[in-house]
Picture 1 (cartoon, one colour):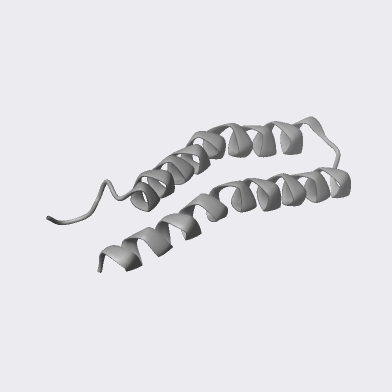
Picture 2 (cartoon, helix red, strand yellow):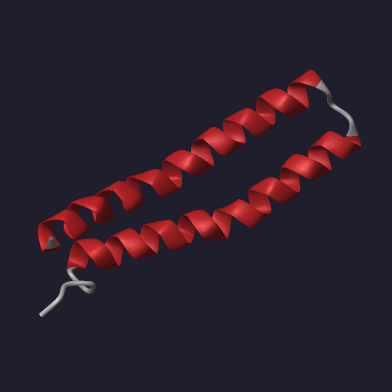
Length: 72
């Protein structure tokens, strides 16, 4: 079970930056489709709110990989 936790730690560490990348990519394409201020504000808020969540995923993955969640 501990090996699974460590493997999933790598998954979380990769998922955080990947999610930010796709979010920014989607935001850029949506803003390009409809470049009004409402769309820019909406996607800006989405990105600002999600970046700390993604950073938390990376930190959680780091600690899982490090073995902080192992049962002794």
